[in-house]
Each structure stands twice: as structure tokens, then as C-alpha cells.
Image 1: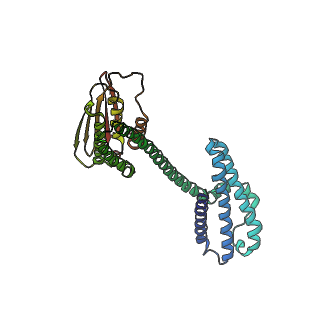
Image 2: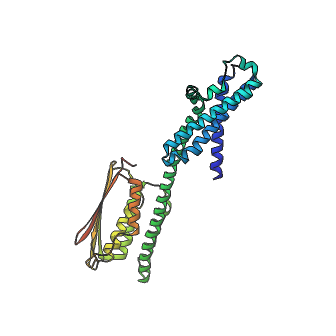
Image 3: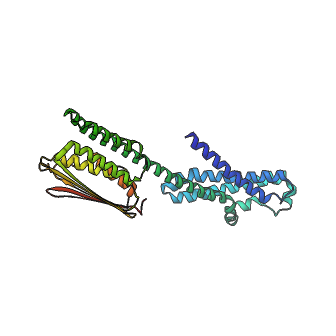
Length: 348
């Protein structure tokens, strides 16, 4: 909070310093008395500063942002009038008194007439309001830039949270598989540990970016399928077809969750032999992923199949491929199927 406040103070100081120097440079050669010029310009910039602070930090948030446009306009005009009146009073009773030689050369300045003149009011709006308009424009641009940055930070934070939820979810299921093999004292336990080590290395150290190589994701799927084949043995038949025409990238762990759910909700509950068919077709334009798996013969139709992992994947797709993906899920009496299409040219 202190850093933000310090930055705002520095930015505002630079802005008003530039305004002062700009006006000073335009008046510098008009008069020989430099003390008068510095004092006069400093006073005008001070009045502009007062008006800017009043409008930007009070009238806009209090009235304009709350849809009270009439009050905002009315009070802004009153503020401008008061600033102009203060300028006139100080000019007559201070500057004209202390620098009479300068003001003798100027046209008569009748304060009373000027304070009730609409023409003078309108004519003087420019110099009074000019810095405020520039300040508001700069502030609006900076606020919009900060808003975009905050949205991106929020998006990144939420995405990382989803990934952090997904990784333990996958690890929990895999450790359960390993535990089951250990109970059986299976000779394949070392193989499972080796595969799990490769998977964890990928998830923990290579999935930090929003997009990773599709080849790496396919290698991850193959390792995971190998783990599940050890667990289910002849109870499952897996067919995995790949047609990769170019080096493309994909959001990490997206496909893994679909495959994991196919084993968890399809094969694990199937009494007879089950099947899983996967197809990945990738080009520079898109990635097409198809998956079909057995529907358990004793499946409870009232049971919700959508897991935490699937919910997270849907959210990740919305974050990373919003408007550039389609996901179609179908269910029959015998199987589940899904087709995911990722449009790469629109996102990556």
C-alpha cells in the first residue's frame, strides 16, 4: 500500500512539475522580473492543482461514478468559478500591488465586472481546466492498464490454483493404485514406482507454463496408461492412435484428466473386460482429441460422474481457450465418448 501511495505521489509530482515548467517557459521572456514570473506561474499552477484534486478525487468518485451527472457538472462549474474568482482577487490585491510597473502596461482589470461576466468565465475555462483534462486522460489510461494487469494476475492466480488442485488429485489416485499393488506384493511394483517418478517429475517441474509440448503430454499419457495397465491387467484393452504433423503446444494435464476419468469411472467399475480408445490428431491449426471408454454394466445412472478434476479442466479450458475450443460429451447404454477440439491459431 505504501509503495502504491509513493508511486502516485511521484507521478503526480512529475506531472505538476512538467506543467509548471511548461507555463514558465511560455512566460519566461515576456518579463524581465523573473521573481514575478516564477511567483505568478506557481500561483496559477497551484490553482490548477486545487481544481484538479477537487474534480478528480472528490467530484468524480462522489457524483459522476454514482450516476449523478447533473450534480457533477453543476459542482464542477462552481469549482471552476471559485478558482477563477480566487485568481482575480489575488491578481488585484497581491500581484497588482506588489508589481505595479508590470500591471500598468496591461489593460484595466476590473474584478467586479469579471466575476459576473459569463464571457470571461467561458474564456478562462481553458487555462483553468486544461491540466485537469490531461490529468484525467493520463489517469484513465493508467487505471485501465492497471485493471488489465490485475485481471491477468487474477487469471494466473486462479489458473495456478486449479493446477495445484489437479496435481494432488492425480497423485492421490496413483498412490492408491500403488498401494493396491503393494498389498498384492506384485513384482510390478518397482515398474510402477519408476513410471510414477517420471510422471511426478513432469508434473512438478515441467508443467509451470501455460502451454507445453504436445509430445510431452503424449509421453505423460503413455506413462499413465502403462501404470493403469499394470493395475488392471487383462481387464482393460487400450488403443492409442496418434497423428502429429507439427510441433504444437497444449495446456498441461488437460488430456490426462480425461484419460484418468475413463479409467476411474469406466474400467474400475467394470466387471467384464473394458476398453478405452484414444485418438489425437494435431496440426498447426488445431488439436483434435477423441476418447471412448466402457460404461460399467452395473453403472448407477443417478451417480454424478463429473469429478473435481473434470470441473477444474473445464475452468482451465475457459481460461486458456475461451472461444477457441469445443467439448462434446456423449453417453450411450454401453459407452462414454468425448471429442475435444482446440483451435491453436486463435490462442497459441
